[in-house]
Length: 488
Image (cartoon, rainbow, N blue to C red; front, side, top):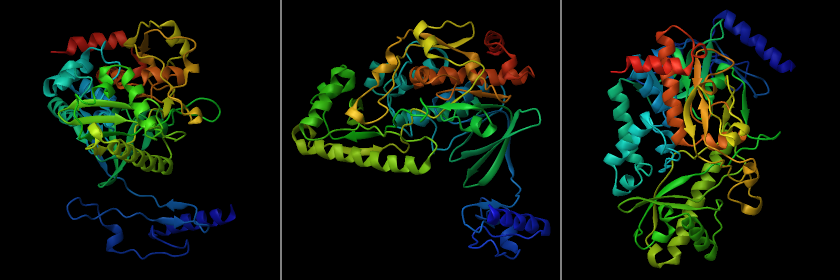
């Protein structure tokens, strides 16, 4: 601890003296001169950046950054963090009430797991109205015959990208891609007032009156200081991650028995085909889908024991998963016959994450709610998807953990208070980071539920702002009435 204290004293002395310390120092005792390069203003045209400065501890385990000025990049009535299925719906719902909306997304496209994750199938969307029904209609109208046959629930990721962009632009949503949230700021009343991001534009601050966390992993809420739960048990075991891919080179009529939409037996046939040829996929229910023309999607991968918050672990999992996909495709191609021209078109930019943080809200959905088929007066949507806990480890190479299903399942409601952060004000959540226990999460986490959750959170953010009330001070029935009055 003593070296760290000495380094902190030097840090304070350096700050008081007004000197600038280079971020690239090899020693805490080295001080860089203050020159033009160290005081330049970030410029997106010339490429100038705001340089970092501070002190490297003597043991080289910590870097203490000097205070720096962070520019405010934007201000909106509602800020949505995450442009996946929940975030798109939140942004659209809020913007369509007439408030200003800023949407921040880390990937280079909107859609999250639908697009950069190459999911290609929307689960539990059949009983949904509102924006979910609107999106399915767009995917159907612009998609293939297969999209039409499935009412848009089997979709082309490229169609989804353009549809989501067009709808958001039409609604007046301000979109910022390639930008990652790295912090949140609360005021003296414990209310979220700003978020911090990093991008090619450097570190920036964004101000808003209401915030919606649609990051999937609850990043905004965690940075704001909210309590949360992760996984199950003392070791916080989480469901495995999976990477998806797009394939080509096979004839749909010749491989029809293996295509998921043919029937549930298709998965078992695909597993048997692989095992008969010496391949044991890490996911015991390999799923092949025909999207359109000669394009297919496939999921054959499980990455066990990976934390959604460990970049090193996710990196290793991503590399393993991509390697496994190519190995499986190569093995299928060696079988010959109908598989002889099979090839990979693309692997997902983002490995699919089933579990991150479950942020504690003003109501927590429980396994008992799932078993009893909860009916709630402030229901924002009804979940019909079953309990779906994928195997938590590779022991026995299982497909799902059936022990979590023993208490049963009935369709149940997601209450509005489960979308409202408990520990800070002005913050809502939507998608898989809402408030619930491990078992309930395994059911409501799918994207057909994320969209109506996002729509509800976006409406609540907009209405609460207009009424000058905080989200927790409103009842969902009041929010619905207000939104119906305001709708054209």
